[in-house]
Length: 150
Image 1 (tube, rainbow, N blue to C red):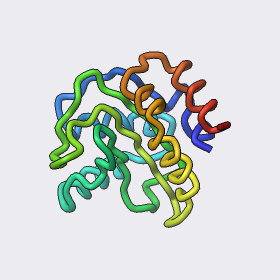
Image 2: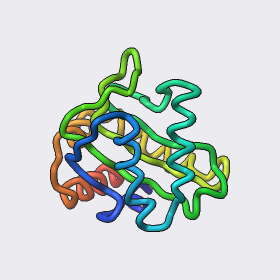
Image 3: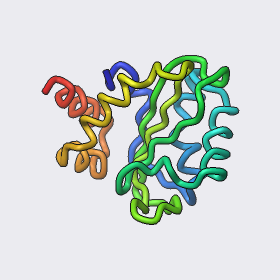
Image 4: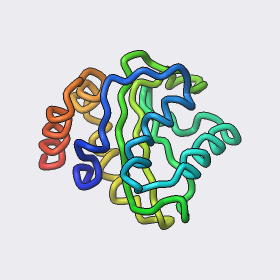
């Protein structure tokens, strides 16, 4: 399920960001380039965090950037960006962030299967280690693919 949306084109590893907004923009960039989301979607993500706080930092070091489903999403999609230097998102217990997944949905519940698949991987210590250390997209994809088959 994850590898249906995460591809070589939607994964970027060991990037550098100066702050939270830049990290979100870099994570969403492949989805913008592929025409899967509009720039308005990225603006909505940042606005939601400004209004609600860093709720997207779901576990230590990992953020799941998203906004409400709607017209700014052209196609269901997800990207993955890792950062060489962790970034403060302002979360009391889960900062700093080194991994940002950007998830975009057109409809309210259409992303639930994907979220379920991702959450099953995020509880595995070996998956987390790979997310925090991998610098090769092919290795990352192979690892995710193998994890989905277990």
